[in-house]
Amino acid sequence: MLNALSTVAQIIGNAVVLFFLYRFLIRAVGVERLGVWSLLLATTSLVTLANQGLSMSIVKFVAKYAGRESAADISLLVQTALITAGVILAVISIGLFPAARWALAFLLPAARLPEALAILPFALISLWFNVLGTIVQAGLAGHELITLCNYVEFAGSLSYLGLAFLFVSRDGLLGLAGAQAAQSAFGLAAAWLLLRRQVPGLPIVPRQWSRARFKEMLAYGVHFQWITICQSLREPVTKALLTKFAGLASTGFYDMASRLVVTLREMIVQSNQVLVPTISNMQQRDREAIPRIYRTSYRILLFLAVPSFAVLVVASPLVSVVWIGHYEAIFVRFVAILAVGWLVNVLCNAAYVVDLGTGALRWVSIGCAVTAVLNAGVGFLAGELAGGTAIVATASGSLIAGYLIVLVAHHRGTHESYRMLLPAESRTTLMLSIAGVLTIVPILYSLASRAEIPMSVLASIVLAFAALLALPVWEHPLRRRLFQQLASGMLT
Image (cartoon, rainbow, N blue to C red):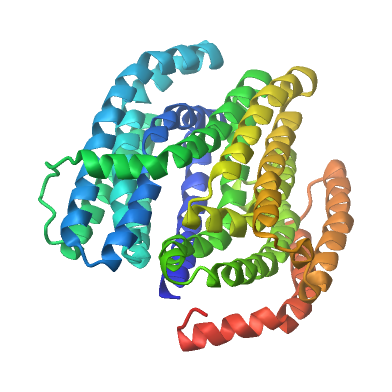
């Protein structure tokens, strides 16, 4: 329970940091230059494809060897993963550099290109540190020390905010790139020191590489690597299409809308993600408990996600005024479209997590591939024919299609009843959420098309809608159960 609570607290803290950071950046560098930074990070994030299979393998196998109390195996496993990822990332970064220069020259206006090329090396360096830090944190997660990971993440976010305030006003995007590189290095160093306290056999610098441990991780990680490649392509492709067909301002507003929606998604999902090492252990000890965990996990996700996403959509105009400084119709539209896709993703997450924990990754791989192909292929046609909003709608729709495949395949493979997807206890909340969004959002759009909406009106609408949902949420049986768990500090 502490892991789940600290995860939620860390994500909330990061959301607050993100709010102040983006509010500052819009005023300091402008939304178009923010779009340049967003596109650059999306392009260089392809470097992270090299580590995700290793990271999930670390979580799974560290949990396995921790159960056997084999610190020597854990030490060898982590060192092997770090050396492997470090070398592969260095090679990929060197190869990606000219490709990234070409992509930026193709996508960006000529006036923005020199600044983007100047910060490209910093972006690659920070991603290198981030990837290695993720592997080290996976070692902590395998020991179920996710709370320590959350401390490192939040401390890194605070340092990034402070450094951004310090350097951006003087150096612009170059200062922001330097701040992120410093924050990434801090995160890696802090996580490594914490892991060495947990695994005393770890050296100061990784120096042992094991062929056997590498083959063990590869056997599990190859499927997950494919999954990660498909997932990681979605954001760079979407941002590239937006930049090409709708302009840098649309890319900047999309980045803000995406971060807002995904932050809410992470608050709900990451507390559920801590079950991966638990399910991995249970597969060895008590396989019959896994379906019960799935059903409980899904019910909690449904209870938390539906009203939360509904309130977010209704609150997006207010967020726009506070965060951007005025009502921005594109931002509000993007939030609504992305919220639908990520809500479906959240509801499918219980099946996804169980599949990760048990290693049943075939249909997860297929679903993620469908998402990537639809997003790129249909997204390009949508951009050609209809512009930015159609591109974002395609991104959301492809996300829905891919993860519904995961959900359906899980139910067919486990013979789980589809009726459990709509439990009677959540029907009132679901109907009120849908009805409220369908009623209130058109009214807000109509008001916005005539004149600026006063902040007091927006706040009143959001509070009224939240109050409407408060009673069924409060009376929900899962609310009582979650409160009891919080009080007792026990995860049932």
